[in-house]
Structures are given as C-alpha cells and as structure tokens.
Amino acid sequence: MTIDESVCTRRTAVAAGAGIVVAAAALTACATYGKENATPAPNPTPASADQPAGTALAKTADIPVGGGVIVGDTVVTQPSAGTFVGLSSTCTHAGCTVTSVSGGTINCPCHGSKYHLDGSVARGPAPKPLAAKAVRVVGDSVVPG
Image (cartoon, rainbow, N blue to C red; front, side, top):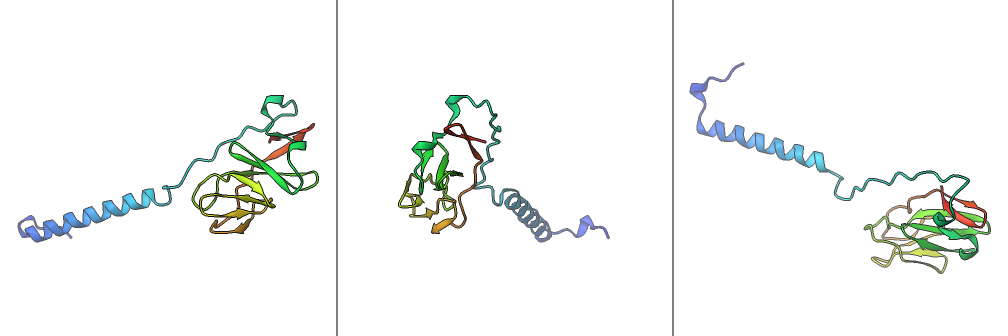
C-alpha cells in the first residue's frame, strides 16, 4: 500500500508529524528510564596478602563489638566478636551518606533511616539494605578485599 501524494492533506501531514514526535519522545523516555540515580559502581581491586599499611580501613581494636566505624565510603561493623562486615555508606533511600554508628544501628541523618550492623533495614524509609563491600582482616587491620 502506497500513499498518493496528491491526496495528502495538511491534516494528514500534521498527524504524521505528531506521531513522529510522540515516537521520538517515547524512545527518549525509554533510553533514560531509571538512569536518574544510576551511578556506576566502583570496580574495587582485590587486596593482596601484602596489603600496604596505608590502605587499612581501620584497626580491629578501633571497631567495637556491637558497633562500627565509617571510613570514607565504607562502613565497617563488628556485629559479633571477630566478625567484621563491610558496607557502603550510601543510604538506599535518597543516596545520602550515613553519618554514625551508635545504639547498635547505622544511622542516616537525612530522613531517619537506620540499618542493623549487617546492613539490613532496621527502620525506613530506606527500601533495601546497604550494599555489601568486601573486607578482610590482615593482622590487626581491616582492609578492603
């Protein structure tokens, strides 16, 4: 089926143009959907057994049992004696940075979200747990990896 150019009216041309604009808008919306908060995850380099002393996140003695510390973009907790957990310091609600570990929870100042020491949500509005970050103990230090 072909279009006879002699029958093409202003109305059909406007309608066709509107259809193209709607299709372009839909494609643009699909191409950007979900990317407003998307941030590429860092690609951490695994730590080696010969980890330089300067790269330690914290000394194990500085992380209380039932508590934790925040070092840059990493929260390191010790939920039970000798168990160290690494977590992202970015709140899953609005992307704020958690600022304290106290009273057995990791706390976000922006909207009051609280996380258990394993990163699971203790109180919203956070919709999901803090992202896990690999950590390990080397000597008396907790290091990335």
